[in-house]
Length: 88
Image 1 (tube, rainbow, N blue to C red):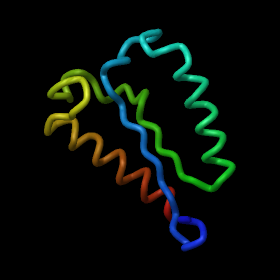
Image 2: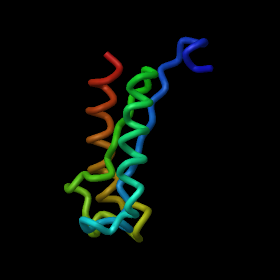
Image 3: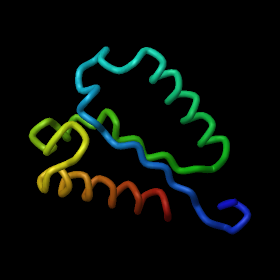
Image 4: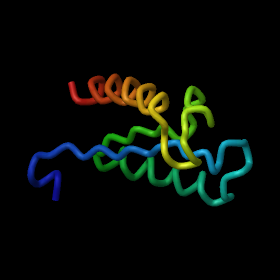
């Protein structure tokens, strides 16, 4: 639908601290993400994956899912830079 209307679809995956240590994510999550990445690339969808960004640590979250003000500032800068690169 977005392609038909000339809209560039962008999918963003955030880092959550639930899987903050190597091997803590479910075993099928990585193959799923690899398949998703391939599918999105084949269909012209921009995929911004921040799930493994190491500059966002527990100190940047108010809980395992939600960023605090410091985390939001770091993420906003990263996201804005990546968005500008991808919509040129």
